[in-house]
Length: 70
Image (cartoon, rainbow, N blue to C red; front, side):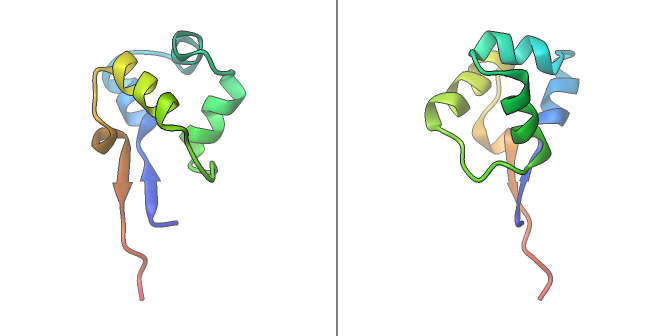
């Protein structure tokens, strides 16, 4: 998939654990794990907004486009 999720990088930079973030933004740790692994098919803008607010970052810090090798 050409969209890479850098949530684990931002969590490390902010010295925050996944469980803490899940509690702050109001989702289950399992759902956050799906997002972190890049296996999620979609993310609600509301959830993305909460993650950005909690980690003091932008969507561009969390999501990266990597073109697939042709």
